[in-house]
Image (cartoon, rainbow, N blue to C red; front, top):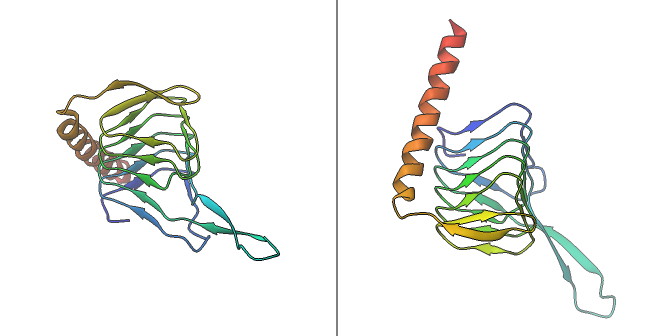
Length: 158
């Protein structure tokens, strides 16, 4: 975690699978959200054909907001991404930079969402496109949200 990021109450980051979780700056992770490394099941090849399971790393870019009650098993979530509440990012999906994932969306395993996409539904579908100015707007919003959080915490201590 690079700093100036917020992990709210009851969020779970499963770093115990010997697979790193990398989180950028100005990231907000909502209450009751779970980040767990996605699994990859491979066949060893030989006669036994015994499958082996490994865990892949998770990367969350800068200026990204993950809502409450989400389950994140994505391989990568880009920078300047807004993820609504109750979203499921299934195993190994990839969310590129500057995307908006609407509340209640379920992104299926291995789906790649291109930059500037608005995604909604179960299963997820691209329903629109963000303007190019969204890249700057999302950065400003994430910095403002962090600043407001810090000020609120300081007031509660008084």
